[in-house]
Image (tube, rainbow, N blue to C red; front, side, top):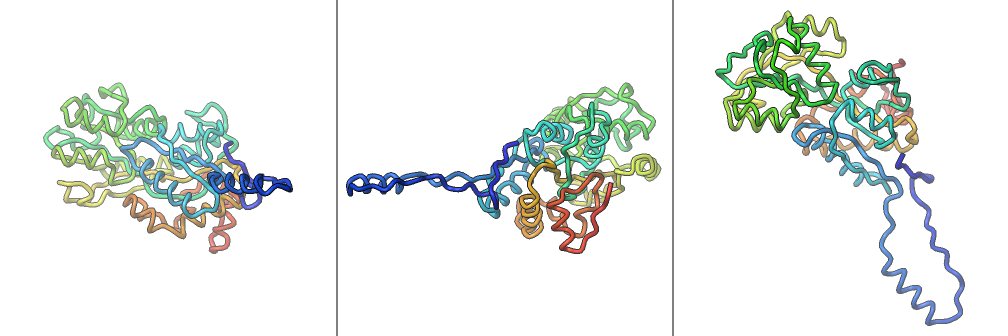
Length: 336
């Protein structure tokens, strides 16, 4: 891990001075001290996010800036990544200390279920963040009105992140389809948008909190349409997969869409390395919920983060430092 902690996670100074007997030498030492750069932050943390065209990266960057500014002697850096499953693996390998992941990926990780080869032992939750909606995007006139209409179409099913792929696989299965029934391509959000604009794709799945930059860009350049999930399909999915929740993408989230669109969502959660010091995680948790308006200024999705829902998507153990904060606020900590 990158964490180097002293009491209150501050490095003690280490500049011993010997008694000097010559005024000239003392003056030289004083001049050197005057021009010595300020000590770097004692604690360096990295947060794994996602691609730049999604929500994880801009929100993670805002979180990094906020924590760096609010916590004493802490420097936090946001890293572009391949999202949920990759982020979990980065924590498992102690490459980062914090990460955004889908709650279903967190659960699979601690259980050692596919795509993970073994249980991830050092993964803890800090907070539930916001719903990540399945946005099946297309353009008007493509003949795609329902998920079943994707049969035989050219469809981006997401990047190499297994979290997105597994979610899309479950959706297709509930609609009576398999990957073999579509012409699947594996693209990130930005390239999904570009290929639809260029007419190289008929539709694409974007699993991210709205508004998503890549979808906003598509709406500005083409007649965007978002495929609505029929009630029967929603019931199948929420019944078979408890981490899926029914939700809507509100009207006017994107240009040209003047009606609510039914869909499903998973929850984005902030997780951490279980080995992080309790007092540091406590301060991180407190800083988040004391400064939510600052995060909301960076991305509208942060407006849905709230203390009363902080544990709503908990499917793995909550870090003791975060649990201490929630207990002080009167929340009950779930046990797993």
